[in-house]
Length: 252
Image (cartoon, rainbow, N blue to C red; front, side):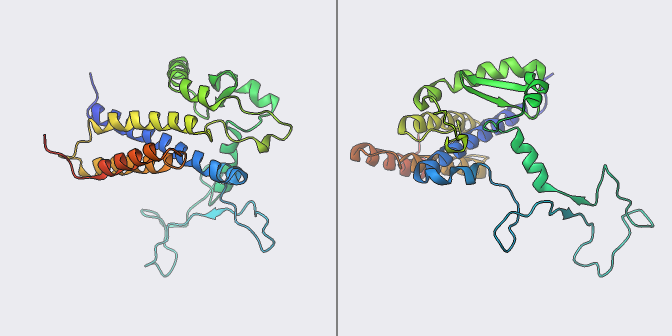
C-alpha cells in the first residue's frame, strides 16, 4: 500500500532540503563577509544577558494555561483543583539548557571520550575528516543515508578543501560552509536541484503560494551567490537569471 499524499510529502521534503542548503549558502556568505563573527551565529543560544553583559543561565520559562481574558487563575479544563506538576511535566522548563544540550551533538563540538564510545553508531561520516553525531539514530537507514549524503557532498568537499587544524579550534569555520566561490557554487547547485524537484509538484496552477515562495528563494540564492562573482559579464547574466525567475510565467 502507498500512503495517502505520499507524493506531496516527498515534494515537501525536497522543498525543505532546498531551504536547508539555501540557509547554508547564506551562512557561507555571512562567514565570508565577517570571518570573526561566524561563531556567534553558529553557536548562538537564547541566553539573556545581565547588566554586565554576561549570559544568565537557568532562566527558565514558567508554563501557564491562563489566557489574557482570565482575571484569576482557573482550574484546568475538566478539573477541580490546581495543576499538579512533577518531574515529567515540570512547571518551569529550561529551553536554554535544552539548546545547550543540542549543541553537544553539533558537528564542531569536541565530545568527551565517554560520549564518543556511547554514541559510536550514531556518527555519520561525510568525508575523510567530516562527521556528525546524530541526535536521532535509525539503525536500518543509517548506511543508506550515509552513502547518499556522501555522494551529494562530494563536489562541495572537494572545492572546500581541508579545514585547517589549529591549536584553537574556535578559529576554524564550521565544516558545512566554504568561503570560496567554488564551494558556495556547490551548495547553490544542491539547493537548486531540490527546489527544481519540488517545483515539479508545486505547480503554479493549484499551488500558487508554495510555487512563488520557492521561486523567491531561488532568486534570493542568485543574489547570495552574486556576492562572490567578480566577472562583470557573469554577474550581469546572474542578475538577468534572477529577474527571469521572478518574472511573469511564459506561455507555451
